Image (tube, rainbow, N blue to C red; front, side, top):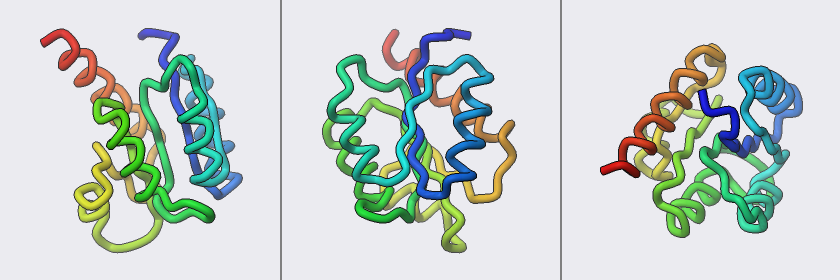
Length: 130
C-alpha cells in the first residue's frame, strides 16, 4: 500500500475522531484531523500538498458536512469523499445530495471504512490512468 496517502478526517465527536485517527495512523496513512466543518475547510484550503481522500461527518457545528463536501467537490471534483453519519434513516440520500462518493452509517465497522478507502483510492488511481 502507498504509505504516503494523505487523509483529512473531520468529526465533532471527540471519541469518534480519536478512534478514526488511531485506526488510520496504524494503517500508515498520513492523517490530518479537524473537530468541525469550518476547521476542516481551512485545513483543506490551506494545504499545499492536497489530500488524497476526505472523511467527514454530516452533522457538525459551524459548517455542516454536506456544505463542506459541496465546497470540496466544486473546487476539486476528483477528491474522493466519504461521509459518515449517525443521523437519519436514509444515508443514500445524503450521498446524492452532498455529492459524497460513499456514505457510512454510524456505527460502522472500521474494516468497512478501510474497504471504502481502498475502493475509492483504487478508483481514483484507475481514473488517473485512463
